[in-house]
Image (cartoon, one colour):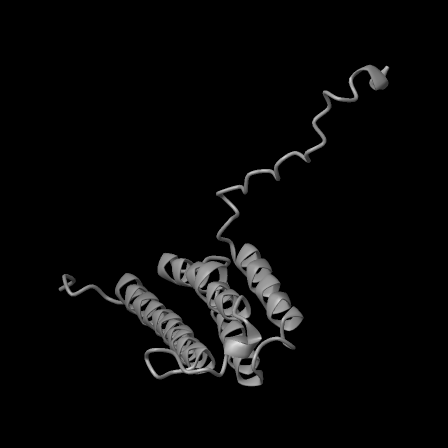
Length: 164
């Protein structure tokens, strides 16, 4: 008897399930978001300047390297926050803002004297630098962790200074 309720039915799809906070920041989830961003860049490669595609993919590759440092399954919270910022907000927003421009305006100088294309390149260079800094910090943290573990083991299993 669905024809009696035809005008009353709500055909809108249900909202997607809420993400599970326990798994939202796992390396697997971060890799999925990074891959989705790579797909976005690839889909729009014909509308973006070539150098923007190259730099953007370099950023996503660097982020991938940071995520790959999570050999024990966890990343430092600061790395997770930075990755999410770059992958979920900064890089896609930068690219979408450029893509929303009228293509005839991309090489036209604005009030600052710079073109939108030049501004895009500057923003991408800043993001690339930030991603590189994040990778260096992550690697340095790993090096610090190995030295800390070595110091712990030496203290734990060597003769104590208190022994006479």
